[in-house]
Image 1 (cartoon, rainbow, N blue to C red):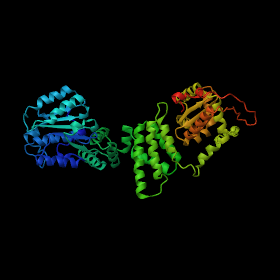
Image 2 (image 1 turned 180 degrees about the vertical axis):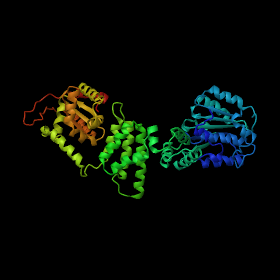
Image 3 (image 1 turned 60 degrees about the vertical axis):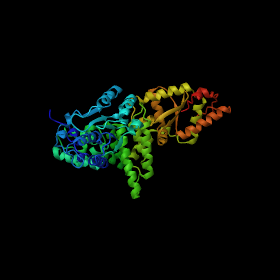
Length: 517
C-alpha cells in the first residue's frame, strides 16, 4: 500500500514548489531571512489553493537549522523528522471545535519546544471554532509566549471574529490561474507517464475552479481508466459538460440552426448532466463571449445586449426551479428565445407546419391571436371565477405535468405556465417566459384537448404575459369596487349573450392574503 494519490504525492514541501501564490511566498521568505516572524498568521482562500501546505512549509522553515533563502533546507535533522515532530501540532477545527480542545492547547503553549525553536499550531478550517473557543484562543493571541506561532487556515474568513483577525497577519490566497494549473498538470503527467490531450488538460484546469488539489484529484481519478485522457473521457466519467460542447451548442444559436440545437440539447439532457453545473458553464462561456464582442466590436447574431440578458435570465432560472418542473425544459426555452424567427424556414419545418395546419383545418375559425377573442375569454373567466376553482386548476396542471407521457412542446409550455384565474369552464394562465405566450396560444386547442383527456374537464383557456395579466387584474378589481357587472359572452358572436351575475371579489381572490398570482 505504498501508492499515494497525486495531490498528496505532489504536495509542495518548499516555498519554491507552491503554485500561484508568489506574492505571499515572497513575504514569508523575507520574514524568515530577516527574522521578523509573527506570532499569528491567518491564511484565507478557497479550497485547494495551498493554505495548509504553505502553513506546514512555514512551520518547517521557522525551525530549520540551515534555511536557504528563506526556505527550509530539507536536509537538517528538523526537516527530516518534521512529520514526527511533537512541536508541530495540526488541529482540524471541523472536528475539534470546542472550548475544551482550545484550552488543552492553551495549557500546553507555556511549555518550551522539545526539539526546535518554535512550537507551531496549525488550525485548519478555523472558522468552525465555536465562539467560546475563539474567546479562549484570544487570550493567548493577546499575550503569546515568544516560542509559539499560530497559523489559522480558513475557507470562510467572514466567520472569523474581528478580534482574532486584528491579531493575525492575514494572507489571502488567490485562486490559481488556469495556465499555472495546466503547466503543473503537464509536468505531473510527464513524470507519471500519463497520456492526456491538451484539450483535456485545459478542461481539468477549468473544472478545478482555481484549486490545484481539485485538479490533481480529478487527474488521479481519470488516470485510473488506463487509456489516454480525452475530453470525451472527462465528459463520460464525471458527467460534466466541456467548454467545447458548450461552444457547439451556442454556435447553433449563432448560426440560427434550430434543428442542430434541438439535437445537441437533447443529447445533453439524455446524459443526465448536473443542471446547475451546465447553467454555470453556459454563463461562463457567454460571459467570455460578451467580453470578446465588446473588445472587438464585431457583429454577431448574439449581441452584447443579448449575452447580458441571457446571463441574467440563466441566473434567474436557478432561483425559480420548481420540483414539478423539468429544469432542462426551462433552460431550453430560454435558449430558444435567442434564435431569429424571421429567417427563411427550413423546408422540413415548413412541411411540418403545413401538416399541422391541415390537421387543425376544421378549427381554423378560432383565431387565438385575435384581440377580441382574448377579451372574451378573459371576461368569461371573470364572470364566475372562484378561489376554489383556482386551487383545483392548479392541482390539475400539476397532475398533467406529473404524467410522463406528456412531452415535447406541450410539456415545455405547460412547465413554464401558472394558472392565475379559474372558473369551472375557463382558465387564464401566464408564462414565466413571455416568449412562450404566443406559442402557448397557438397550441391552445391541443392543450385544451389534453386537459379534457387527462383531468376529464373541458376548459376554455387563454395565455397572457405577466404584464397583460397585471393590467387585467387591476381592471377587474377596479370594476368590482365600482359595482360594474360582467356578462358572459358566447364565443359565437352571432348568438345572444348569456348574462350572469358578477361574483364578489373575495370569491375569486383572498385579497387579505394578497392571493393574486
